[in-house]
Image (tube, rainbow, N blue to C red; front, side):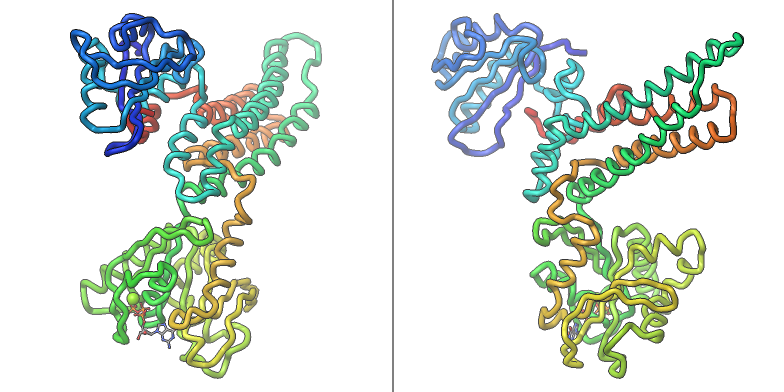
Length: 469
Ligand SMILES: Nc1nc2c(ncn2[C@@H]2O[C@H](COP(=O)(O)OP(=O)(O)OP(=O)(O)O)[C@@H](O)[C@H]2O)c(=O)[nH]1
Ligand SMILES: [Mg+2]
């Protein structure tokens, strides 16, 4: 797989003061000699000419040579730092291609680093996330993962699991003999110790995933309550059309914004109502499906329609706000999930002279966060921001790990396999069954760091990198 020398321009396209050509391969000695005319010393900055065919000078700059295995990729790496002009860099790249290197695919340097054991998979992914980070917090959490903190947690969980598996496997091997080799309490204690750690790691990763991928916040509610106005107020631009006519918004409209460093994907939707108009019907259908997959749903009410009840959220308001979602809330399995993602927003408080507020409202056993604001005057927007941050339990994201959906899924699987093992242990199931549960739990964790991977997964991960990384 690590056959040919690969090369790529590692700096961003366009004009720049410095441009870097990066080359990696199993033996770069000859190629280096052709490109700079001498054998570079390892890890030393040489100021020299970069040579084209027949010794013509293409550029001059700094050559850095990192022989294997002490390089980013684990192979020989040569970096030529020249001037950042497109033509200069192109001709340097063409020269490297003429000398037998081939153009690197996106992420191929990082992929080689992974395949040569220089990085594990989460660290490699963290590189891409660091480059893509669009807030300081996201960048910090990517660095934390890149330095191996996340991987160390995974490895320590795997070590505990391995310990429990060894106990079980040896008990299985000796099950024909009369010797009592398994102390079930010990296995149980090991597993019970793992569960809270898995839980904690998942929480920190979830925060990281939200920082990384952004929280999806859907603005929903009846027509004319001010969803599009709130979208515009939060995004600071006139993204959505606002009119006094109910049914103005038909389509989903989405904007990425950063609220105090927290990346949010805001989605404005069509007002929920029965309609004979097929376009509006389709809009309402899309609004519902956006709500179903949102991290958080802001359900708006027009406060001016309830002039007599400015205090607690009233039964009437709840009925109006939650009415269109009745079918989901009636479903026992879905109810908790929906309620956990809802926040009621009393909009248009300027019409009633109500103060902005953020409170927990309780009605018929429902605990629902309530924000009072005015999309028109901007009063209360800061409180909504605070609620969003609390919702993400983000508090600055200081100990979040950059994480992706695949990490969360693997952590969930590891947890449910450990729980299955505990349940099987409690009901004295055959040891083989418990051993299999633990094997699957470990396999899930190994998938995170890339101990067990498929080519498909690697292709999918590295293809999203930029060229030259
Ligand atoms: N006074 C006042 N008017 C508001 C406020 N928010 C929205 N409006 C007005 O309410 C009307 C409807 O606003 P939109 O933002 O279009 O409402 P919507 O929920 O997107 O409506 P649809 O797209 O039709 O579902 C417009 O005339 C807005 O100017 C507010 O906070 N105060
Ligand atoms: Mg609208």
